Image: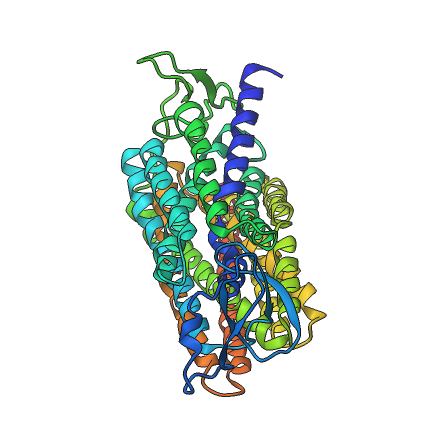
Length: 510
């Protein structure tokens, strides 16, 4: 393999590694909630008769240092858990329902997910104006700060959850945004790499599972998140060694050599080392304006598509612990299915990879289309539709209150998420100039994030009366159905463009 070959694969592998470790920890929220509940975070809110919760009882428990812990619940069976000091504690099972506590956690995730989305617009603009390096430095500061805040959450300062979960989300997303440009190093298979990268972003939620496993084996949550903060320093390597200070541009094909692409060179000026990309000698074609891209129908519909599916996904993740607690009778089952969900979500690396393969395959299928619009838009129709279908199926499965159905629900949810985020980035990367990717992706995510604030309304709705959870889920199923408008419009536009091309060619021949 030549120098260009091994170097680009090294850069791609490193990008996937750091995205797996730090990109999407926000999506492991429901696992972190389980740990926080075990530690009694916000358990003090469950002590009033007005709360729809089991009464808190205080009891002496056997610990390694004789501490007295707050026990929540009315289940007589005992279980081994750990308090916020990481000590082995024999306690009763934790309460199956506490609306006030659940409300705090739901609000924390809602604010965190919205801030995660809003920050993407701000950081996308910073990326567009100042380049890759500045964006990643800011992201590193945010992520490390958030990790340390989550490390020091306790019953005395539980509010650190709010900025902590927000900051790790805000600091993780720029890894995906800045690493997506690496797809431009591959003349073929760029969408496959984007899908693999999005799968790595999905898989990173499993880091929270490692925190839970460590917690259950006596390692305090504080030490786990401090370790995560320290490990995040590896991002400095790609930021200052592998990636350029500005951007990796798409390859420009010359008239004489249609295979002309990007050339990897080592920087040897100003004492810097890294990778820079040099375009071929012919001048680049004129790019469409950023304003025209933002105002295009395909971009607006992409926002609508992502907003509807992300709303459903966020509501599922944000209320999964509540859903499992409502469905299952004991804490062991909740813990078991929490772990199963995370194990299944780890397969997102493969499912996102397949979405990229399907997208690249569809590009090959329609590469001989006569109109440019069909060549660009038609390949996205199938993967966009699969994401919609998975969202509908997941919403339908939630309506079936059977524990055995949970296995299928988790699989479908993982597929939905994989196709959702791989196509959220892949569609923009393929359709619009790479120079605009950061700001366009930021606008898409921030718009979808503002819409996702509605998830808290659905959460409050589900608390109103006995049948409310079912009714809220049915409403979300209907909402997800509207997401099919996006792939249908791209299919319809492609057919119209092809028809116009045929008519125009016929007139010229005459």
